[in-house]
Image (cartoon, rainbow, N blue to C red):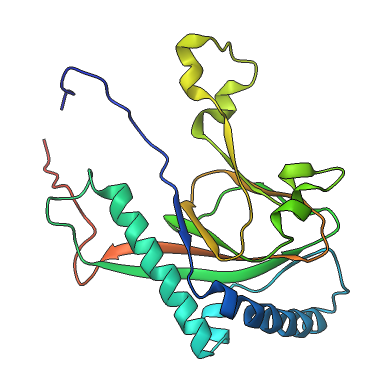
Length: 233
C-alpha cells in the first residue's frame, strides 16, 4: 500500500513513564525484602559483597506479600496502557482484550561506580525499569565525577549506530539527540520496547541505587495475535 501524499513520521520509538501512588509507603518494604533476598542468594552462590548485584528473575513467584501483589498489578496496568497507546494505529478499530505476561522479574542494586553496559532484552516485546531507591536529586547530581548522569538510564535511539562519523546538518537535525537520559526517581516506572538499546550509567551515592526490572509480552486474551490475513499468490 502506497502512503498518501503528505508527511509521514515512520517507525516511532514508544516510551511509557508512570508513577506509582503507593511508592512512598511500600518502597521501604521492598528495600528490606530485597536485602534479605540478596543475602540469601549470595550465600547460596558463595558470592561476597560487591558494588553490583542482580537477583534471579523469579521474584513473581518468590515474593508473596500483599503489597507486592499491588505493585505487580501496577506494573501490568501501566504496561497495558502503554501497549494500547503504542499500537493504536496498528490494531483494528476495536482493540483486542489483552493478556499481559511478565516473563521475568528481578531487582538490581548498584553502588561505588557500578553500572550495566549497553544491552537489549530478548524473548519479549516490552521491558520495564522501576526505581525503588536512589539518592535525592540534588545529592545525586552533585557527584564530583558523574554529575547529573549519576545513575541515569540511557536509551539509545535507533539511528545511534548510524551517527558514528555521519555528517549532520540542518537537514537531518531530527536525528538529534542520539540518546535520552532518564533520571532515577523512586516510584517511577519506565516502559520501553525490548529491542531498544539502553544502559545504566555508573552510580555512586549515599543510598544504593535499587531498581526492579522485568520483561513482558502482550497477547490477545483467548484469541490469536495475528492481525493481518495472508494468502498464497
